[in-house]
Image (tube, rainbow, N blue to C red):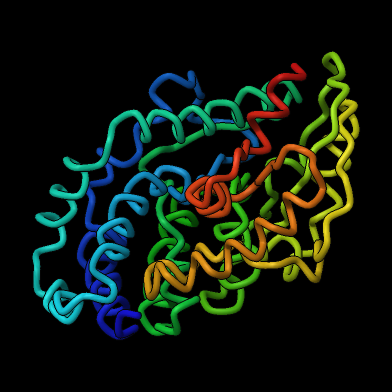
Length: 308
């Protein structure tokens, strides 16, 4: 296990100087929208929080963390905080496979397709779509999280943003619960699956829907995506420990200990595989972590887009 302070200080330093936990320039990490044909004005702004876009970079960086976790070289991580944010971010961007970036960008475009099929009046402003800072809150650096959240909330407010459509549980929780509490600014926040009204052909199949912690335990939204799937003829089988009692995929612990994250994830994967049905995830971190453990997992949007 790495010393949490070393990880926290590195992420916090990058966030303060670049508004990005990895130091990657915004124009490099957020490019998916260029092929999505989205307007800049509408009723509700699509807000990705960059979580899907970050996954390929997370996979690359945690791959190195896993490699050196129990080696003498692990102690040198403490010096990462002194590296210039943009310099390390550019390096990470260069060594992260382009194919993985494209795969996760495609998921975001699938979400746009099903929102448009549901006649949702959405728009997108890529310059306003920024990271929520949620990982620092999870790791206990409340001071840096609050400072970043205030910056982002003020930026959105000045742009006249009132309604936000989110695509992942971490960003949804941050904007819906934490921003009002710590910044005093509230937005009308809805995860995209709350807005779906799909009338396409039905898909007769059964899936195992994994509840991420924020949707299941803290926001009470587990039934909403299940109902959306049911509308397409897709049945969700019962999973041991779901809803308010869902089991973590292990992914959030990766930055501190990839080994521990793997142990937690394997327990959850066993529960999911026990159903015998294909696994569907609705969180980019869960999706990536379960795949890393060898599971054949699809994103919720990738399943639903087949019904339009």
